[in-house]
Length: 214
Length: 171
Picture 1: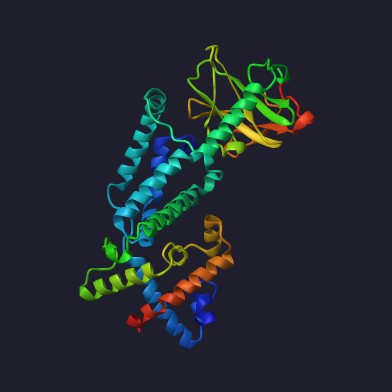
Picture 2: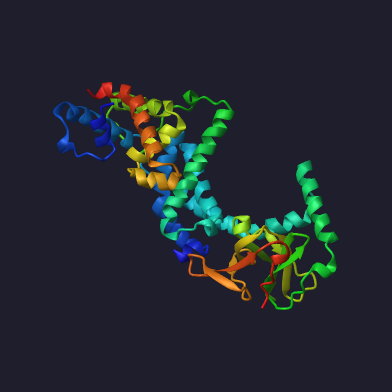
């Protein structure tokens, strides 16, 4: 195709600057492109908006029953053998970790690094007596609040341990699936771009790992 | 916008109202199917709502939703290719507020346009539609598709080269 015509169609050249023969070709293209724009739908069909909004409402309403059902109803869980082995290995490492290697966490909420033979675990802890669930989400899991903390004794202190790679990580707690809260005991914070703050944890790895608990 | 990101449904409804037409217009021309386009738009908004916390730039949430729809279109077309369903079976787009219904000639042009668009590769069709139907600049396309401006230009130029044959009916 003529270079001048390409530039015109790309919006880089004004029609008034075109040579007469190119201008004629440009008019043909304009007629074709107008028909392309006018063929087919100009907008969404009536009813699509309601359909979307109903789906969202249903989605929001049905989220918790579905999660609860998943835990209660008997069902088969399919897992790839390799992933199963890897999960078993991770669990073995967690349970075989010597108890005295764990740094005790005293404050009601904090992320604390735990080091054992170069393996760095982070213990997340949040006091949230009213919560029905607490998850942790951060740049280490694409901000998906799937890592659930547990409150086995029902005292409102939720905790869980996660293996993280050395580096600086940002994270937040998610209460009841939707309420994002900042760790009140983090050592450092950074703006999250939504008017809230992410907690920051620095993991140096090995013997250099340090507790961020106050 | 913060209300939208916090999952407020009324605020999200405003967003749906504002962007549904452009998403549908694109999806319909990409897939060539009205039913698939409606499903894609619906799924794009649902996925967007589910993942609002991942939208890192609230000011550009419209573009973010568009990108979700673009990816869903790609998945749809890939799935279709796997199922070996020929586009020829799908049939041309139905007019719905588009070209004036002034006879068989217009219907024929519409069908030719449909066939010509569907003959393009999905990458070329995507670039061509965003440029010439949605009217995006190359810079906007590059940002939303995460593809370089030069690569996008090449796709649009190649699409236009392939569509040259269509111009005969306009001369």
